[in-house]
Image (cartoon, rainbow, N blue to C red; front, side, top):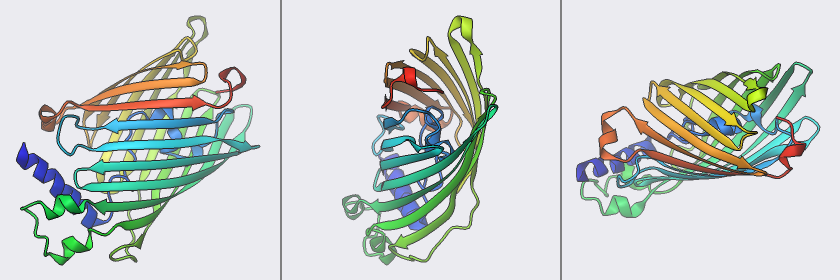
Length: 308
């Protein structure tokens, strides 16, 4: 177990040296993103007629020392006819490696009788830093190495994403976003370094309503090709009962990470709470208690006055 913890510290150091990490190109840090698709695709920003505030906490590999922990706060909503705005703040820690991120997204939505589609752009400032105490006090790391000491100072990046997200005939969900289409280091060592890798997240889903049962099924597929992350696919199934008073869901991921996730939640008036648990099919699962994620959502306009 001690050797595995040291390995995580070293991975954190390597990612800091490599400049691009999971919170730049990799948007799969969340497992409940299909409840708030603007987290992955700025084209989805503000498409509801209500605004909402989001608070999210995720702990991956719980019970394992140095496991990744992510806290996210966000806001999205319309600010005028066809215009949507989103704000996001993220604090992430992973052993000796920490990331802070702030972002702004804007979208323009075209709404016709049969099709509602948004085009959006998001900009983010991302700061990466290594924990000096973890490095200095680790006997396996040469603290006199200039490459190591140079990375103890924070590095900052500017990152831009564009996306299109829509729903056709209130049934067919579709979208594509290009994370990190611009990704430029703006502070720290090698400040002129940039990435030329092309990433994308493709979305396809279907909304099936059963009015006499007050039931809505929503299967979706998210295909992701992201920087430093192998191609992978998430297959989600969400079911809403009694006007979202009860939500249940399943997620199966294949590719970079093979995992199975379970979702349960509720929406009471303007307040929503969702919890999910994910377990991996990889061998490392035996060393941890899986991943847990909690989300709180507050709708700022009464649900009865909103349109989905």
